[in-house]
Length: 140
Image (cartoon, rainbow, N blue to C red; front, side, top):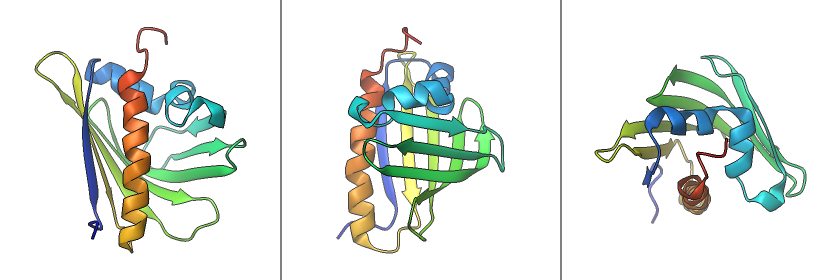
């Protein structure tokens, strides 16, 4: 059985401030967050109480939420709700300085009401973080 709180960690070969920007700048976020075929569009109002939305017309899906904590470049906390669903979960992303100058990204996604939701999000976050690791930080 999957836990109702999910935590994933990845090492990213860029400094924390740069990874923070890739995660919080709407244009950069749209480049890596979902697969390129999704034609992702993002809106980010980066402040406590500010809203974000990540949408794909091609995939017919979107997620949105409200920022609870914005602590650049170390920690980001926001709610998470898929369009058309009532369930709201909570995501915390930490950007920790690695010994090699890179960043250890820790994603904690909690408040799942069933193990199936946690398992589905585990796959999605693993895919998302793989794209972040492969992202060309020098191009943006």
